[in-house]
Structure formats: structure tokens, C-alpha cells
Amino acid sequence: MSVSGSSPLPSKSPRNLRVVMAQLDFLVGDIPGNTERIINAAKRAHSKEGADIVVFPELCVTGYPPEDLLLRPSMNLRVTESLERLQSAQLGAAIVIGVPLQNKGLLYNAAVVIEGGNITGRYFKRFPPNYQVFDEKRYFSEGEGAVVVEICGVPVGLTVCEDIWADGPVEDSAAAGAKLIINLNASPYDIDKQARRKALLERKSRDNQVSIIYTNLVGAQDELVFDGGSMVYDHSGSLAVEVPQFNEGLFPVDFVFDRRCQPVSQPLPAEPSVEANVYSALVMGVRDYVNKNGFKTVVLGLSGGIDSALALAVAADALGPDRVRAVMMPFRYTSDISLEDAAAQAGSMGVQYDVYSIEPMYESFMAALAEPFEGTTLDTTEQNLQARIRGVMLMSLSNKFGSLVLTTGNKSELAVGYSTLYGDMAGGFDVLKDVPKTLVFRLAWYRNSVSPVIPERVITRPPSAELAPDQKDEDNLPGYDVLDQILNFYVERDFSADAIVAEGFDQADVDRVIRLVDLNEYKRRQAPIGIRITERGFGKDRRYPITSGWKSGN
Image 1: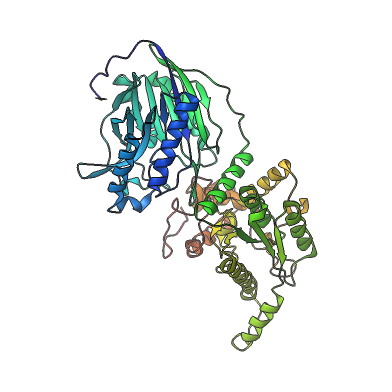
Image 2: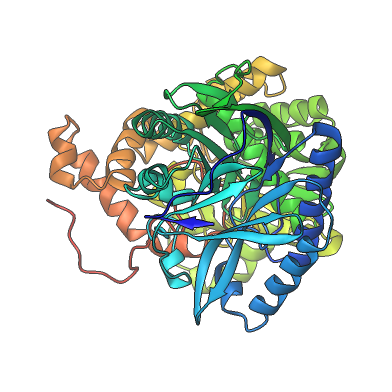
């Protein structure tokens, strides 16, 4: 091993090198299971793919993000046992893995090289991120300097995830003699992420005249989806290999190592549409959350509206129709169209479908509330009661049959509080939590382009909660095309009210939307987690106080 400022050992004569990128899904906290997965993958990569080196994602031993599990007293013991097991496993190939390592009383996010049964290199991540969903500085110290390791006779520079986004790690490794950079990643998905990764890797490989292997985690953990999309760039900044996103597997790459370490280019996958990409993320998010948490089935309320229709499609695609139950809970304001469309979609997708009227329960509640409500007029209280009865129905089915309740609220509704606490917000996982309403429509059209399962008039008719006669969402909100733009400026880009108005929006609309966003922070704190697809989801990305005197004018 050599460190920044020293020279690596002389490399062997020109040769071919096969590296396998292990783009795999690991379970957070399951250190024995993850270790077994690494061993099996490494042996398979060596025996079936002829791998010389197998590269795994960041913190693959613990899964990512392990969060406060890293603070458990037994963590270091379990990691040590894992490393000992990996060294004695007779893997055949050299492996590069991600693991939390204790060193001189400090904890580091590390890349470790195991070759011939020995740890031959260790690198400590130099730039643990502390923004958006990341809070690595809560746990990890910062590493210092480059590490260049001879692996199979090739001088390889090691980096971990955020290191490649910063100035220093790649540059220092190249200066220290690295002919190949390996970058271990647990980089979560958002809509534009792969394009930003490509632009970065192109620049870093070209500027430093070095090939880069970018191996990323795939799978979902709570609100985060990891999309894979592992890549290899050559020393000229050209994309040589790209692995399809949202696919697990072992992906070999051949290198010719002479004066440089040059990858042999492979055909690149087709560029997916935004809608296809987001839909894949939603499917993976639901599948992993349900399966990793041990749920056999899910249940959701199917209203005949577009949000629940899209959520049902995602759930059925993620889990299979035999694991999905859709429940229509009509009331006097539920239209015949909604009843027809919900039944049609459930039938076309082959899921279990039940219809239970909430009318008798509503009448019982209103009878019980007659005395305290005497002399008052109808308002949103009665509307919310309908939603809360539906929430009780779904949670009761969940308790009785062990099903996870999927909620169906979208990002636009959650932003402005167009939802009912303990009603349509009741549940364990929100499929569309980070999906703006305008994107909901686009995703519905996309899913129907694959096979038509959502009745067309569900997509084309004006959205309505159907909690009052002739109700439409836009009676209470700006049109979604306007609302989503204002929300994008305020929630995702931190524009002030004045700055948003300067973009050409009506002052009254802007003030109203911002007031609703700020006012409904208390609701969002009580909402179930859901899949993150943007850079600023309602979760760890955005942490605003509930009690606040802040004014959002300028």
C-alpha cells in the first residue's frame, strides 16, 4: 500500500484485468447476512465471470444508511467478525468492500481491500457528507490523504462516494500513481441524479487522465431508493460501461493494463424517460419496504381517483396482484363513475377488491356527536370524519390480517395540508409522498402506455376528494400546474415569496400557498414515510420547525 506522496510498487507486465461490479441490494443491520451475500457474490464472480477484482458498494457490510446502529457498542465487534470471515472465505478474487472501521478511537467510513486472505489496503472516506438526507458527520471522522493499493498488480486509488464530488481525493490518487480509481457508492436516487453523476465522472476521469469504476448500491431503505446505475469511464472522459438502473447483478468489465488501465467499451443501455425512471424507483421503494419489513400483503383505499389508482398500479407491479388488496369505501358523495372505475381497475389488475360503505358508521358518529355539535353548521369537520372512518377501516384490516396500509397522498397535497390527519394520512408507507400532482398524471399515462390498467377518465376528469357535493380540488387550491411550480420554487429551491412573485406568479396565490405550506408542518411530521424521488423530499431533506415566527416575504 502507498499513501499520497509516495510511489506505488512497479506494476507487472501488460495484462488483461477483469473487474466485476457487484451492484447488489443489502439489508441494513444484517451484518452476518450481508457478509454471506458478499462471499457468495465474490465466489460466483470469480468462478462464473472470471473476476480478478470484485467491487462492492459503500458500507455493504452494514447496509446503508446504518444510522444510529453505528453507535451500538457491539457494532465494532460484529464488523470485526465479518472481516475475519471474509478473510478466511477463500474467495478466489480480490474484493473491495465498504465497512465502518474503528481506528485509534475514531470511526471511519472505509473502503477495505481483501486479497489472498489478507487485508491489503484501507482507505478512510475524506468527505463524509452532511446535507439533505446525509448526516455522516454524526458518526464518522474525516480521513486524510490518498491511498493507492496494488490490486492484482494494478495501482488502484480508493475513494468512497462523496469523495468523488469533492476536489482532492481523485486528484491526489492520480498524482500518487493510480492507474485506476475505484469509487464505492451508496448514492440515493433523485430524478436528475444519474445525469449529474455522468457529468462529474466525465470531468474527473478526463481531467485526471485516469479510468474510474463507479459502483453503486441498488435497492431501497426506508424513504431512500438506491438506483445502481454503476459506470466505468476511461481516461479520456468517455463512458465505457453503464449498468441498467434498478437492476441487481454482477457486471464484468475488462481492462487492458499497459501504460494506462483502459476499459473495454460495452453497448450502453437506452436512456429511460423521466416517467419510466421514476416509476421504477417507486416500484423498488414499495417492494423493498414491504419485503424487508416482513409484510406478506398490503391494503389501500381505492377511491376511483388518480392518486389511489397510480398507487395501486405501483403496488401490484412491485408485489404481484395476489399480495395487494384494494378497498372501496363509498359514501353518499361518491360518484357512480368512481365506483365503476375503481372496480374496473381492480379487475384489470387482478387484485382482491372489496366494497364497504361507510354510511352506517358515519350516521353512528353523527348521532353520537349530535349533542356537542348542536347549533353548528356543516364544515370540514364532517368531511374529515368521512376520511377518518376510512382510515379506521383500513387500519382494522391491517391489524386483523397483518397487511401494511399504503397511503396515497401526493407531494402537492401534503405540502398544503390537503389531507386529513388520522384519515387518508393513516397508514405505514406513502407511495406518492414525494411525487407532485402534475407528475402523478404523467406517471399514470406512462403506466398505461405499458399496458392500460388505469381507466382513462380517472386521469382526465378533474380531481376531487368527493367529501362534499360537486367538490373539486381546484375549488380550494390553485390549478395543479400553477401550484406545483410555486411549490417547486418554495420547497425545493428555497425561493422567498417575493422571488416567486418576480417569476410571474400572482401575489395572492403565492402568499396563500406559502402560508399553507408553513401552517401544515405539524401534519407532515405525523405523516408516514414515503419514497423520495426529488432532492428535497418531506423527510430528512427538509427540517423546519413547527412552532415558528418566521415570515416568508423576502
